[in-house]
Image 1 (cartoon, rainbow, N blue to C red):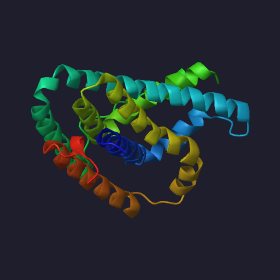
Image 2: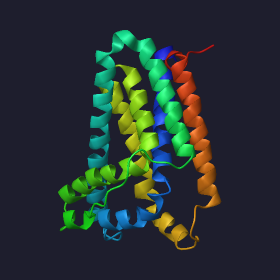
Image 3: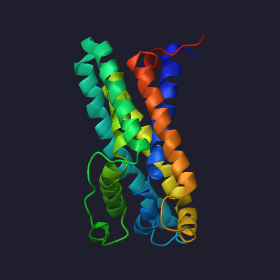
Image 4: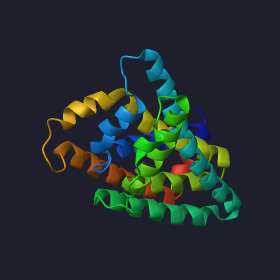
Length: 227
């Protein structure tokens, strides 16, 4: 396996892990059952489940892939300043990691009534809900998403940036589609306040983001190779 392949693997693993952390964000996690009920109203209808799940996945993935493509394009335009980009990006990722560690968001969440966009059980309405849920996720998981977008900028390629955010969306959509039923049961048994496991996950995620930021700043992340 060559250096580029390893670098891509580490970047994609970071993006996927970021998606998982976003799924378990304190302000989004309690809303998972509501989102799931909107996307898949009848779990016993296999055809409906497949159709709606696919629509949701495409809406979510295309939205984040577009953001990644824009970030990668910006990095491509500033490619001649790669070393400076790495330093700035690394510092930002460290900052975002600290904000996530402290359970702080970059922007305030706005209420979006998803029900009015779900007037039928069509593929398109699920696609639209996927896009809208992406918008809901931005304020809650803003430090993580900002970190992955910043990492996408360091790639210097629109396609790689899009792929990075596509993998990030997988980290959200896979547990969303497969574990939302379990999440509903968990939430029915938890008390108010942040659970210990969620706090631990937030601490680990914040520290890992700061480690990645440090590696990006020193150019280590983009030059990982087999020793």
